[in-house]
Amino acid sequence: MNAVEIIRKKRDGEVLDKEELNFLVRGLIDGSVPDYQVSAFLMATFLRGMAHGETVHFTEVMLRSGEVLDLSEMESSIVDKHSTGGVGDKVSIVLAPLLAAAGVVVPMISGRGLGHTGGTLDKLESIPGFRTDLSIFDFRNALWDTGVAMMGQTEEIAPADRRLYALRDVTATVESIPLIASSIMSKKLSEGLDGLVLDVKVGTGAFMKTMEEAEVLARMMVEVGKSFGVKTVAVLTDMNDPIGKAVGNALEIRECINFLKGNAGDNLTDIVLTLGAWMLYIAEELVRFSEDKKTVDPGASINEGKLAEKRIKLEGLINSGKALEKFVELLESQGGNPEIIANPGLLPVAGNILPVTAVEDGYITGIDAEKIGWAATLLGAGRLRAEDPIDHAAGITINRERGSEVKREDPVAVIHYNDDGNLEEALRLVENAFNIGTEPPGLREIIRKIIQ
Ligand code: URA
Image (cartoon, rainbow, N blue to C red; front, side):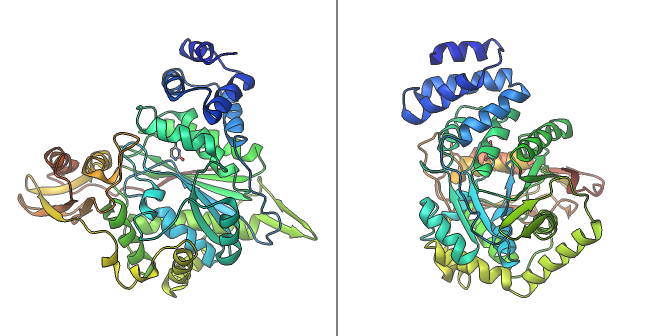
């Protein structure tokens, strides 16, 4: 077996078997298959796709490339969430402590920014001192102590995804259903979960631009989850406009702090509470404890009334400050400076700001999330090359939301930057992201569909 032959087969649209996929993933880990061959394989897969069974095999060999956490000694439900990638998507950062405050154990392994979308790890690392490179030993201890821990893929856990993820980010091979499904599910299945809620983004700012594509991705991940005994629910959510008002790492952490202090009220709230209610439902209604055994019922019908109760319970945990307290515990357990709660000025702040104004009179009919995402990446909030450093302070804040009436020259957003190398291009993108029409837009449904 050799890598050139495997790449050739994929290039010509053939289906690879498990041994061939294993050969490639092993070679990626031990260095016998170099990055240029892996990149060629990724591009061939991007162009040719994978058969359903091939994707399942690929997920499995990626999962087996590292350790699988055994958390069976914990007498709690273990449930996590993952997003397929969005703009201003800071949902995980508030959801993980919120669910832990509700008594659910959340062992979250996340990724960095990918393409024009932001990454939870990059956002967390904008918090002074916060460590995301935990050993399995530290990760477990953090889970025992606080019920929540957030880390990245490491050499111990999900190492294949760690390498593939970084290569995909800079080889234009992100938007592929089998590559996204295997990346997400290999990470998540290594966490020893009872349940998983997936936020499958759809729209301009998502990798899946249409409902059809998003549904194919969602169904594939739900099936993979089920086949590994994990109750998996996919919530398809709108990603045409950015989530919340901030895009960029430290800017988004500020928004998360505000959210946990109870100052929310936009599309972020709806997404957090919907995903959170499903997580809590799985944890409290579908995981059963008996003697020394824990079981999950993957096919149980859902009681909508109870789902609504879970949402109310989560709102209570935000309003009482319990979710914020849990976030402080998370910061303390992973070395982050908890003073940022009282003094968000301790987070990185950009040296310069540039207001962006409306280019004409009218109503904002939409804010193109993809343009905002690329603008943030160009300013340094994401990477254009694997070795690029992140500027944690850079990004965009949005002042006027979809539906607002504006006059030409009204300020609609602010660019935060240190490096002005790509400033002109970023400015054009942000200006053009604001679609302005003569009539107010209709209501946009954030929660589009549930698949389980
Ligand atoms: N999130 C991941 O972990 N992987 C992807 O490919 C996309 C989003």
